[in-house]
Length: 235
Image (tube, rainbow, N blue to C red; front, side, top):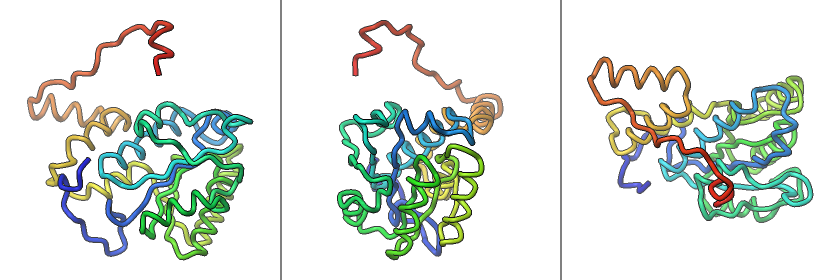
């Protein structure tokens, strides 16, 4: 969306659409297969909240994948659909901060706050987070967008990055921090669309308030069409 759709927000220690960059690291099938500490569908959903919110608020977003052909598979199609035509930065390194192209893409944005999601927490999240902090960046780890092979691995990784100075957040909290004021109408409808589609009981509550309290018409979703072979592979 255009920057003209939203006002400039005060910072004072908070995230704004104008002071941060989003990085989404190794959101690939094999990496998700290995997650054992959290519900995998919930991780996909949280990353969609973050990706769509970054698109709504025009926040620069760096996508990166590791060993796509040799092991990990393509970027999830759900995320690719939010950024059509965008080619993720391909790496061999577990630590994306060791990859010159990735680090350069972050630096090119000119922003010193990184909102970071990825799989797995103990390696692909913790390692770049610690080194980015060392290089003078502030890092906000979007915890519900991350996962690891066990609860112990994820919890230890989060303790490690927090002790190093990173700040834990959730996808919803980031989106609401960017929105900040419900009177900011330029992004309001898009944010509510994300809420209704991805935020569970909160989204259903919004739909209820719209229709039953305020008398708005029910949200109309695209009609379901049974996929055939041509549709399934049309991309």
